[in-house]
Image (tube, rainbow, N blue to C red):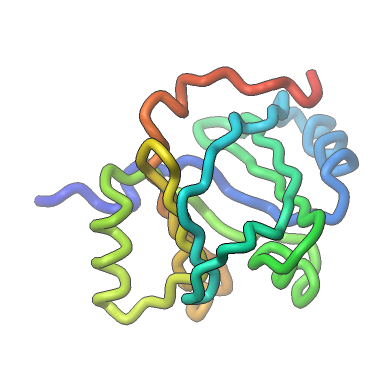
Length: 162
């Protein structure tokens, strides 16, 4: 039997209006500490099926421990993005669940072959990337599949708050 695409959960992402207040809140519940993920260099980004050459949107993000998976907080800062669209239309809340995969190109081909809409597709310099697939049509939650670049998970992140 082949390994499931969803065998390696990584994080749950919540879109928030104020990342600092959100970090304080979730840390008060015992989650964290929260860290800023290491920077990545985007080679190509596609949003809603269109190649984004502007790179014009900015987000703040922090990732904290939450048991066996992580909690990612995302605050849209400027520009149009799927995170801004979510916040404007639905308010704060769970945006997606993320899973680590071995081959992001293969996964994207398989899901588009099944007729699943790809809301966001990113490829990174040095390999890897992610896609956000539109599984919100059933249940309202998106799924992110991510192939980190080599060594990314081993890089230390800057602590946002202890």
